Image (cartoon, rainbow, N blue to C red):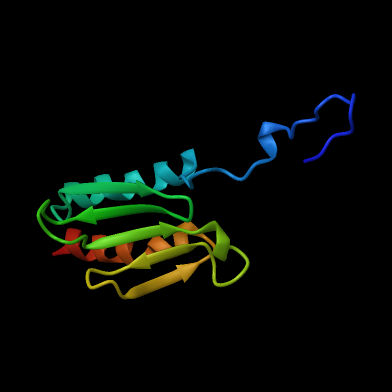
Length: 119
């Protein structure tokens, strides 16, 4: 940004910048951790990890701490206007569900939870 000689420097307002990393909002975390707690109670999951980058926020759930994640949920706001910012990945990295709504993306995991409780 250039300024004229003698004119005060005008700095951009700090709130107008893009965030340096993507994160989950409180309601999103409540929804994800509620599902995680129910899966732990059903004996399906034992550990989780979260990763926050400038492009996406990731929640990964593990059956055992030494394995690859059984389920991974990604939030990518850059895809909000395309196929949806939420993606559910399976154990081998395959895309199980994409969408604009977190509840719809988590639905396959919740159905698996119902089957685990009924068995």
